[in-house]
Length: 521
Image 1 (cartoon, rainbow, N blue to C red):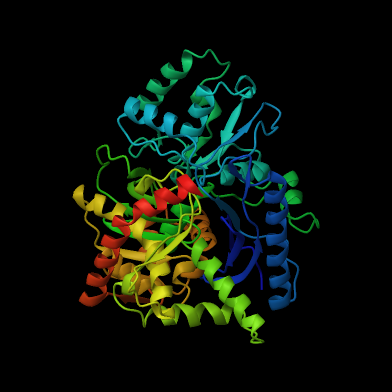
Image 2: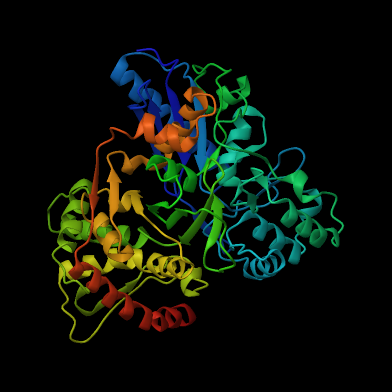
């Protein structure tokens, strides 16, 4: 098999770095992955860049191994490569590309003051996790690294720079750094001017426009893999330089692409360590502090409901049950545990029988929590069954999202369809059914949903490489990619919907429990 017409998408996600190689028919030909994890250091959720480098290289090596095992050849070239990563956060570098402070990820909720000031200044919600909020919070604290600041980036933009030498960013990822203009396909000029005036009073030797990466829409030329970049990605020395590179994108944009949710009034829900819903709108929304306005990889406006917490608490409980099984002399790996426990959740009562949980490993702005404390609670007469217990934790993973979706409804946003992707949907028919109950709309899951991010990035790379002149991203995906993709669509029944509503009322009433846990534990 020749790989010259294949495309490679690599995504640095919250817990795994994943790679997907697509063949000429845009079908998965090989894959690779590597696990990694963030850590809390001095109150900051961070990843060491050395870990990012090593994990990227391990992931690519795993892909090469998979290619060799399947095709008996060493991977030396592909048609094009695209890099995706966790959006937002703060990666600050000096003129010599030295990192000026530890990487501050999307998971941090430490920029409330900056977020509030910028939101009031710009008349648009600026979330705490956005790069500009992190930058201005550093300004408010007069952090010592700011006079040396030369470049800001996201994780995908940084890795792309290491591979190409170009400081560029896909517009979807860029929209999590600073507000963008969907018409100009660039940063919002009026808002940029207002922010520049705010920063000018500090007399730093830089201006905001100059330290941000250049914005590119999907399909644009984002440079080529340099010899240094090839050696960085593949230290074994087999990968050839000169490969075209797609604009680097954020995990929100690749998730939308992976499930064909880039057209107006379509939406998707990405559910893994965090959970977020993306709904493409026909125009920007007014100010709503719990809703973010970002962009598709092509630049269309997107209303985003982002929640910091989703599957981490579920994973912790599954691991606990795994320990119990091992102690009982029963060997059960995760491929057995997850379907077993998720399947039990389907047997639970519609309202979880009086149980409630809060899956907050970190703060949650939707419900006003500045920190996280995972909490499980129950009424004295609750039906404490395994089925209700598991259903409670799956519902908890969706509860904050539902609160945010209710705010979208108040903004008269129409959602014709939702697609789900991410680990929450890997057990067929469970997460899909529960999301439908929470969102009160049909939910579609595609066959490729489990590897949404890198698959979506590979599709964006294919769009750059093979789209017809003038062909929109929406048409490319609908006609050339997803027309024959297997998928299932499920609508929750009225009992499930009513049950989730009852659970949500209990969840909202019990938020004081979570608040007390944060204050006392």
